[in-house]
Image (cartoon, rainbow, N blue to C red; front, side):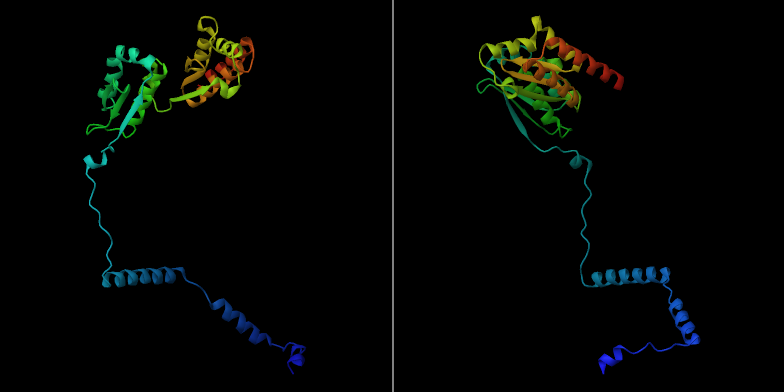
Length: 252
C-alpha cells in the first residue's frame, strides 16, 4: 500500500484555503523589541540568580601613581675589551654623566673583572633605560665615540649591527687584507664616504665591522660594504651611494 500511495496524485486545494494558508504564514512577524526585552530580562534573571547563589565579581584595589611608575629591578654587566680600558678610564666622566643624570641608573666600573655594571634604582623612570644604557656602553666598548654612542640614549630607532668579513665571503691572507683596505680606503676616505651617504657610523675592528644607525641606513651601509668585499670597484659603489643618498634626500 505504501508504494501505491507514493504514486497518488496530489490532492486539490481550493483557492479559499490557499489564501488562508498564505495569510497564516504572513501573520508570523518577529518583533525586535520583544526579543531585546526578553533577552534583557534573561540577563537580569541570570544576574539575580548569580547574586543569590553567592557568586560575586572580583574587586581590585586602584593602582597608585608610584606603583604604576615602578621599574623592575635589573642589572647588566658589559664586558670591556683590554684595548678599550684606557679610553674608558679617559672618558669615564663623559660616559658616566648621561647614565646617572638622564637615565637615572647606577653605574660602576669593575676593574678586576673588566666590566661596567649598570642597574636600576628607585629613581629610574623609563622601563627601557637599562637596555639603552647597556647598548650605549657596549657601543663604546666596540670602538664608537662617546658622542656617537650617545644617540642610543636619545633616540629610539638607533641600532647596532655587527658582522664579519668571512660572513660575506671566505677570504684568507692577502685577499682578506685587501678587502679591509677596500672598505677603509686611503686615509679612511671610503669609510667616511659610506658614513656620510648612509648617515651611519662604522667601526672597522680587524675582520669585524660594526655599524651604528637606523635600520634602513644600516642596510644601505651594509650593502655598500658587502659590494666592496665581493670585489666591486669603489667608483661603482660611490655611484650607487650617490643615487641612494639623493633618493633619501627626496624622501625627507
